[in-house]
Image (cartoon, rainbow, N blue to C red; front, side, top):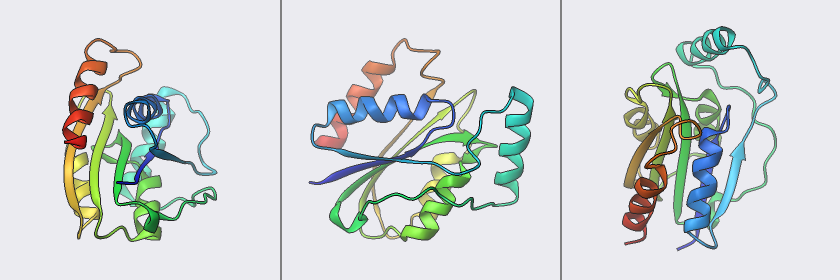
Amino acid sequence: MKTLIVYYSYEGNCASIAEKIKAAMPGTDTLRLSTAEDKQRGALAKYLWGGRQVFHKKKPALNPYSVDLSAYEFIIIGTPVWAWSYAPALRSFFEAEKIQGKRVALFCCHGGGKGKTLEKMKNALPGNTFAGEIDFREPLKHTEGVDGRLAAWVAGLKG
């Protein structure tokens, strides 16, 4: 089954998880989403900027990418949690790609709680079969147990 990992990573947590999934699933392709607005901000500015984007349902323009989703049966999608939701870059991606009829798995990375992020992602992706979901609390800082949890999750996705 041809697999693609699509993710947005602002601070590197989701990128870390995506790379670990790719290593555990040889032959998997990745697509890291980015926007022109992806500049580093201080802690408070980051939360205000990100929260405002989520609450106003912003759809930032994505930087160009060249992936044909029709070539993939299984898509793993990852996001950081922003204001108890998924990152606006994924909102833009979901609108642009109209993902349907796929097997989908979801992951998120957060600083203290996932809120309803994964549920909101499922709601944004109707017409798909969901194979699994998992969340991680700042996996670059809280590394203990990450590899074991991720390995078990990936094994479940393969089975």
